[in-house]
Amino acid sequence: MATNLAIDDRLLQKAVQTGGLHTKKETVTKALEEFIQRRQQRKILRASGTFEFREGWDYKADRRGRESCR
Image (cartoon, rainbow, N blue to C red; front, side, top):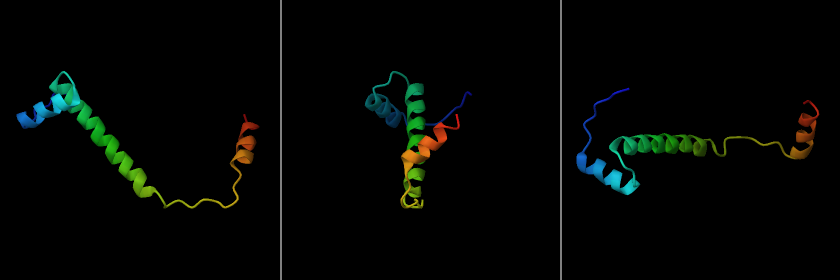
């Protein structure tokens, strides 16, 4: 999808140099990927501590039970 954006040239050039990438397109794509990844990681971190775990759960026994279902 072709998109026209007004991006600060100095900021973009600094990002190209910092990232060691060859083109503006590569730089913007990489920046968007990293932005998405960080936001997804934040969701995971916010969920931390909100799950209840079963006391005495035997993961090995549970795994053996599932393997026999195959």
